[in-house]
Length: 87
Image 1 (cartoon, one colour):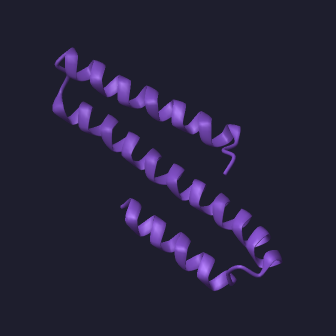
Image 2 (cartoon, rainbow, N blue to C red):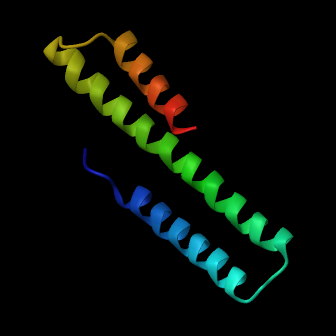
C-alpha cells in the first residue's frame, strides 16, 4: 500500500509528540503534563491506524471486488480485526 502525505505528516507529528514527552521527562516536568502528552500521542496513533485501515479497506474493496478475490464483507471483517488488534 502506498501511504499518502496526510498519513506521513500525522506520523511526523506523533514523533514530535513523543520527543516532546521524552524532553519533558528529562526536564523532570510534572507527571500530569507528561501523561497528557503521552495520551495525546497514543490517541493520535489510534486515529492514524484507523485512517490507514480505512484507506486500505477502500483500496481493497475497489481492487479485490473487481478481481472477485474476496467479498466486501470479508474485507470489512479483516479491517475490523486489524482495528481491534491495534487496541
